[in-house]
Length: 204
Image (tube, rainbow, N blue to C red; front, side, top):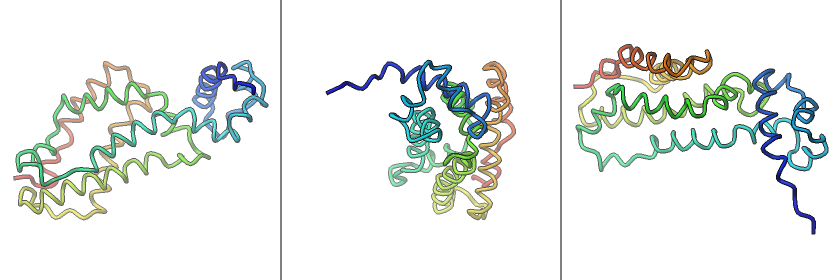
Protein backbone atom coordinates (compact mmCIF):
# COMPACT_ATOMS: atom_id res chain seq x y z
CA UNK A 1 0.00 0.00 0.00
CA UNK A 2 1.38 3.40 -0.96
CA UNK A 3 1.87 6.01 1.74
CA UNK A 4 0.36 9.44 1.20
CA UNK A 5 3.07 12.03 0.67
CA UNK A 6 2.44 14.75 3.26
CA UNK A 7 5.63 16.66 2.55
CA UNK A 8 3.85 18.98 0.11
CA UNK A 9 1.12 19.99 2.57
CA UNK A 10 2.98 22.85 4.38
CA UNK A 11 4.20 24.29 1.05
CA UNK A 12 0.73 24.05 -0.44
CA UNK A 13 -0.98 25.68 2.56
CA UNK A 14 1.57 28.51 2.64
CA UNK A 15 1.29 29.10 -1.09
CA UNK A 16 -2.51 29.11 -0.85
CA UNK A 17 -2.44 31.54 2.07
CA UNK A 18 -0.26 33.97 0.11
CA UNK A 19 -2.44 33.79 -3.00
CA UNK A 20 -5.68 34.18 -1.03
CA UNK A 21 -4.22 37.09 0.93
CA UNK A 22 -3.06 38.83 -2.23
CA UNK A 23 -6.15 38.36 -4.40
CA UNK A 24 -8.96 37.13 -2.18
CA UNK A 25 -10.66 33.76 -2.62
CA UNK A 26 -12.64 34.62 -5.76
CA UNK A 27 -9.70 35.94 -7.78
CA UNK A 28 -7.08 33.54 -6.43
CA UNK A 29 -5.89 31.04 -9.05
CA UNK A 30 -5.37 27.42 -8.17
CA UNK A 31 -2.71 27.09 -10.89
CA UNK A 32 -0.67 29.91 -9.32
CA UNK A 33 -1.00 28.26 -5.91
CA UNK A 34 0.23 24.96 -7.34
CA UNK A 35 3.08 26.53 -9.32
CA UNK A 36 4.34 28.45 -6.29
CA UNK A 37 4.12 25.33 -4.14
CA UNK A 38 5.86 23.22 -6.79
CA UNK A 39 2.99 20.73 -7.03
CA UNK A 40 0.51 19.67 -9.70
CA UNK A 41 -3.20 20.45 -9.63
CA UNK A 42 -3.72 16.70 -9.56
CA UNK A 43 -1.89 16.54 -6.24
CA UNK A 44 -4.21 19.20 -4.88
CA UNK A 45 -7.35 17.39 -5.98
CA UNK A 46 -6.13 14.24 -4.26
CA UNK A 47 -6.25 16.21 -1.01
CA UNK A 48 -9.07 18.72 -1.48
CA UNK A 49 -12.28 18.84 -3.50
CA UNK A 50 -11.40 22.25 -4.85
CA UNK A 51 -10.27 25.77 -4.10
CA UNK A 52 -12.82 26.41 -1.35
CA UNK A 53 -11.87 23.30 0.59
CA UNK A 54 -8.25 24.41 0.30
CA UNK A 55 -9.25 27.83 1.71
CA UNK A 56 -10.99 26.09 4.59
CA UNK A 57 -7.81 24.11 5.28
CA UNK A 58 -5.79 27.34 5.39
CA UNK A 59 -8.01 28.93 8.07
CA UNK A 60 -9.00 25.73 9.90
CA UNK A 61 -6.84 26.18 13.01
CA UNK A 62 -7.79 29.84 13.37
CA UNK A 63 -11.50 29.08 13.05
CA UNK A 64 -11.17 26.38 15.72
CA UNK A 65 -9.30 28.76 18.04
CA UNK A 66 -11.91 31.48 17.63
CA UNK A 67 -14.75 28.99 18.08
CA UNK A 68 -13.16 27.89 21.34
CA UNK A 69 -12.76 31.54 22.40
CA UNK A 70 -16.51 32.04 21.89
CA UNK A 71 -17.48 28.75 23.51
CA UNK A 72 -15.61 29.54 26.72
CA UNK A 73 -17.56 32.80 27.01
CA UNK A 74 -20.91 31.24 26.12
CA UNK A 75 -20.86 28.08 28.22
CA UNK A 76 -20.97 29.69 31.66
CA UNK A 77 -22.38 28.42 34.94
CA UNK A 78 -23.67 31.65 36.46
CA UNK A 79 -24.69 29.96 39.71
CA UNK A 80 -21.00 29.62 40.52
CA UNK A 81 -20.31 33.35 40.05
CA UNK A 82 -20.59 35.98 42.76
CA UNK A 83 -22.27 39.33 42.14
CA UNK A 84 -18.85 40.95 42.11
CA UNK A 85 -17.62 38.53 39.43
CA UNK A 86 -20.68 39.21 37.28
CA UNK A 87 -20.14 42.95 37.69
CA UNK A 88 -16.44 42.69 36.84
CA UNK A 89 -17.12 40.98 33.51
CA UNK A 90 -18.37 44.36 32.24
CA UNK A 91 -15.26 46.33 33.19
CA UNK A 92 -13.03 47.21 30.25
CA UNK A 93 -9.86 45.88 31.82
CA UNK A 94 -6.87 46.97 29.73
CA UNK A 95 -4.69 43.97 30.65
CA UNK A 96 -7.41 41.45 29.79
CA UNK A 97 -8.30 43.28 26.57
CA UNK A 98 -4.65 43.35 25.53
CA UNK A 99 -4.47 39.58 26.07
CA UNK A 100 -7.35 39.25 23.61
CA UNK A 101 -5.53 41.46 21.10
CA UNK A 102 -2.40 39.36 21.62
CA UNK A 103 -4.31 36.19 20.76
CA UNK A 104 -5.66 37.79 17.59
CA UNK A 105 -2.22 39.13 16.72
CA UNK A 106 -0.90 35.56 16.65
CA UNK A 107 -3.73 34.68 14.25
CA UNK A 108 -3.72 37.94 12.32
CA UNK A 109 -3.07 36.65 8.77
CA UNK A 110 -5.79 34.01 8.91
CA UNK A 111 -8.06 36.42 10.80
CA UNK A 112 -7.79 38.93 7.95
CA UNK A 113 -8.42 36.15 5.42
CA UNK A 114 -11.66 35.34 7.23
CA UNK A 115 -12.76 38.97 7.52
CA UNK A 116 -11.64 40.43 4.19
CA UNK A 117 -10.72 37.71 1.71
CA UNK A 118 -13.37 35.03 2.14
CA UNK A 119 -16.13 36.22 -0.25
CA UNK A 120 -17.38 33.20 -2.16
CA UNK A 121 -16.73 30.76 0.68
CA UNK A 122 -18.77 29.58 3.65
CA UNK A 123 -16.91 32.21 5.69
CA UNK A 124 -17.86 35.24 3.60
CA UNK A 125 -19.96 36.70 6.43
CA UNK A 126 -17.54 35.68 9.15
CA UNK A 127 -17.41 39.10 10.84
CA UNK A 128 -21.20 39.23 11.11
CA UNK A 129 -21.46 35.64 12.33
CA UNK A 130 -18.72 36.22 14.92
CA UNK A 131 -20.51 39.33 16.23
CA UNK A 132 -23.80 37.42 16.34
CA UNK A 133 -22.25 34.63 18.42
CA UNK A 134 -20.65 37.13 20.79
CA UNK A 135 -24.01 38.92 21.09
CA UNK A 136 -25.48 35.68 22.40
CA UNK A 137 -22.72 35.46 25.01
CA UNK A 138 -23.03 39.12 26.06
CA UNK A 139 -26.82 38.90 26.27
CA UNK A 140 -26.49 35.95 28.64
CA UNK A 141 -24.22 37.98 30.92
CA UNK A 142 -26.54 40.97 30.66
CA UNK A 143 -29.57 38.81 31.54
CA UNK A 144 -27.79 37.52 34.63
CA UNK A 145 -26.73 41.02 35.68
CA UNK A 146 -30.28 42.25 35.14
CA UNK A 147 -31.77 39.35 37.10
CA UNK A 148 -29.50 40.07 40.07
CA UNK A 149 -30.31 43.78 39.98
CA UNK A 150 -26.73 44.66 39.01
CA UNK A 151 -27.72 46.15 35.63
CA UNK A 152 -30.67 48.53 35.39
CA UNK A 153 -30.75 49.43 31.66
CA UNK A 154 -33.45 47.85 29.51
CA UNK A 155 -31.44 46.46 26.58
CA UNK A 156 -33.07 44.35 23.85
CA UNK A 157 -31.18 41.56 22.11
CA UNK A 158 -31.32 43.63 18.91
CA UNK A 159 -29.71 46.57 20.68
CA UNK A 160 -27.09 44.29 22.20
CA UNK A 161 -26.27 43.02 18.69
CA UNK A 162 -25.73 46.59 17.48
CA UNK A 163 -23.46 47.31 20.45
CA UNK A 164 -21.49 44.06 20.03
CA UNK A 165 -21.08 44.62 16.30
CA UNK A 166 -19.69 48.08 17.00
CA UNK A 167 -17.39 46.74 19.71
CA UNK A 168 -16.01 43.82 17.72
CA UNK A 169 -15.52 45.96 14.64
CA UNK A 170 -13.28 48.14 16.80
CA UNK A 171 -11.46 44.99 17.91
CA UNK A 172 -10.65 43.62 14.47
CA UNK A 173 -10.27 46.76 12.35
CA UNK A 174 -6.62 47.27 13.46
CA UNK A 175 -5.78 43.91 11.86
CA UNK A 176 -7.64 44.77 8.66
CA UNK A 177 -5.60 47.99 8.51
CA UNK A 178 -2.36 46.13 9.19
CA UNK A 179 -1.44 48.11 12.29
CA UNK A 180 1.87 47.37 13.96
CA UNK A 181 1.82 45.70 17.37
CA UNK A 182 2.83 48.99 18.99
CA UNK A 183 -0.15 50.72 17.39
CA UNK A 184 -2.44 47.86 18.42
CA UNK A 185 -1.35 48.34 22.04
CA UNK A 186 -2.13 52.05 21.83
CA UNK A 187 -5.47 51.26 20.20
CA UNK A 188 -6.24 48.94 23.10
CA UNK A 189 -5.86 51.82 25.55
CA UNK A 190 -8.14 54.04 23.48
CA UNK A 191 -10.70 51.25 23.12
CA UNK A 192 -10.85 50.71 26.87
CA UNK A 193 -11.47 54.43 27.38
CA UNK A 194 -14.02 54.67 24.58
CA UNK A 195 -16.25 51.68 25.37
CA UNK A 196 -17.98 51.80 28.74
CA UNK A 197 -20.17 48.76 29.15
CA UNK A 198 -20.79 49.85 32.74
CA UNK A 199 -22.55 52.95 31.42
CA UNK A 200 -24.22 51.17 28.51
CA UNK A 201 -26.14 48.70 30.68
CA UNK A 202 -26.10 50.88 33.82
CA UNK A 203 -24.15 48.66 36.17
CA UNK A 204 -24.70 49.61 39.80
